[in-house]
Length: 210
Image 1 (cartoon, rainbow, N blue to C red):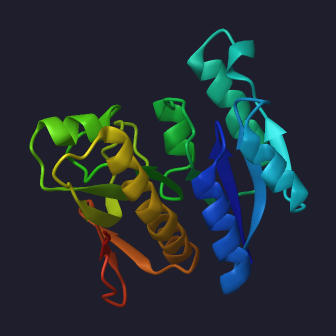
Image 2 (cartoon, rainbow, N blue to C red; image 1 turned 45 degrees about the horizontal axis):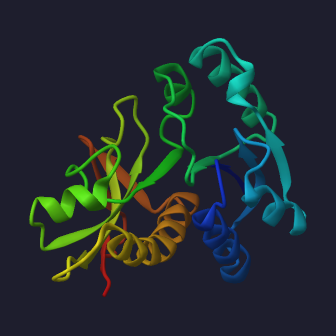
């Protein structure tokens, strides 16, 4: 049985979706821990209430990003993770940290990458006149929001959309997409060739939402 460690900085709604899916769908895995850079993160309470180990590594206690990442890696390694999941973890990770967990760390980004990496994705999509927006699950690489794409979910950008309204629809799709992608990684269903990820059984890697 594989071990999953999830990193959060706040409520962790994607973390909640992954925990529920893992338990309800009977994955060959367990959520070994939920780790945050903030002791106040609401998601820690959710995890603890379900008997999941929690840990806090406060980034403010470190003089550099490298020092923080070194301690974070040490804490994560203590849980022997086969899969590391970033679920609203609001820290930019160093190249050394990323390389340490290379091939087993996933992130979800609220845009159809490679469009709109970084912040304010929904506002930027609306301003650009996009007719589709969405979410992307990708392997984490040292280049921010540019790792190999595992799966995407698309939603229409509606007339009169606000960034908040679009964000809510995209987040609903994230709650479906991210658990599925994590399960694929757990079950060794993904093949990576020349930077392109394919599902070994040809399962579609794109979903459509309203």
